[in-house]
Length: 213
Picture: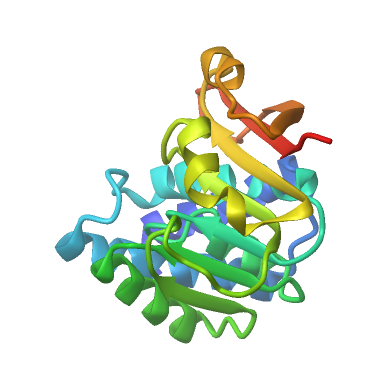
């Protein structure tokens, strides 16, 4: 095993411990298998600007897992999933939770299907469609979105996919005061959670949004 891989293994294990999560070794290996596949495909398809293994552990895996404890249970939809973040790391660590990865890009969904197959994720479905056009015939308990767009636009696109008692979880950097002030009618902020991501020297916030009564 190369030194960079050893560093990634240790960094992931330490980061998971700092997040207070109990992730079995087999699941940690699945996370690293997914990361290696993302790095491989990224050389051709440019799925992410983060390229080195140690930076990907912090900026992708641990960043995604930092929201794990704050998400309600139930079926999860990852809107604009891109390279599978945060959906795939969350699905690996919660194999009992149904997870749907939604993206409009064909190359991205091709990667997602390959990742799901190679990692062996039986709880994950991949959909190639625009959120505003997709009508699956059911709704989701949790919708996640990571650094995708302004919260108001995300709700406009995907609000119809959120169950009546569901929670929209927007992953943001600095506290998005302006975006919160511009929430569309029918939604309200449940809470804003400051996040600590191990090995990442940057602000992170999770904005939890629910339907207004």
